[in-house]
Amino acid sequence: MMKHFLMNLMAASLLLVLVSACESEPRTPRSIGTTSEILVVTQTNAQWDGKIGDALRAYFGQAQYGLPQEEPIYKVAHIQVGNLSEMFKKHRNILLVEVVASQKEALVETRTDLWSKPQRVIKIQTSSDSLWVATFNEHAESLKLLYDRTERERLLNIFGPTAKLDIVNAIKEQMGVSMVVPEGFMVAKAAPGFMWLRRETPENGMGILIWTMPYRDTLQLSENRLIYARDSIVSLYIPGPSPGSFMTTDKEFITPRISRVNYFVNDFAVENRGVWKLVGDFMAGPYLSYTVIDQKHGRLLTVEGYVYAPNKDKRDLLRQLEAILFSLNLSP
Image (cartoon, rainbow, N blue to C red; front, top):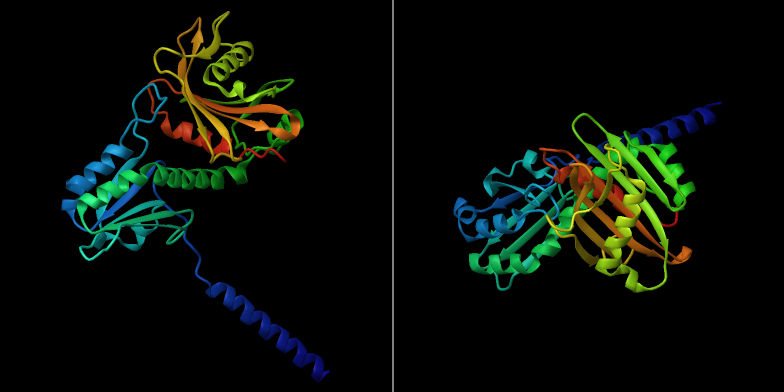
């Protein structure tokens, strides 16, 4: 009896130690900050007011391509390093500016989830302001892609728990792929090799398109062929509210921009950014699509998101759709 008591006591003590150990582990706090925002931390206000700040504002403040109204690719906030409190350390995207005269060569460092999660902290350290600007300009596009990834991760962390399983399962059954689709979307249309998902609110409308075509050769990924393919699909399946109206690609106001990328869900994809419009009506908005070669099924697969939000900002809505598109899994 005493033996069993001691064994139970030892087990209880061990459990208590394990629980205490788990409770003592520090939890990484959730990151903060508005969508598409970078917090720049400088050593002095002179750095922010001078050529370093000018370079940052020029790059991150450039217009996001494919939006009907101009919006910057990122909003940039600023503090001095002496004000980098625990609260500011939780910011999702941080860029640290360090100029040290004794620094022998330019240094670019990046860390994930340093003070919060998800988080991207990037530090550029050089010996002079001029070299800092040159180093930043050299790596700016790569740094932006890192911040983009963190933005998508945050959004998918939000969307994942609210994913609509009936739509997720419908996509698997209809298209043979999987994708995280949050609450609010509904299946508007499904046909062989095509799906249209919609979310409509009083403020805006968002759509997700998925379509496939037989894959023959890489000529199908040329700019003209991709735009022609898009127009043939959306004109057939996406009607406008007026009789006879239908969706097409705007080729005059903002020329579609086609670029090959290696950071989508596989090693090769073609990104298409531009503006859609309705023939026979007065609606328009931005769209973003990615086309990949699905070797397993011998087909081209395109996933697209589009936004309709008249007289309102659209960048962050399009970024939400971008995160959803990046959740694509060709082998569900």
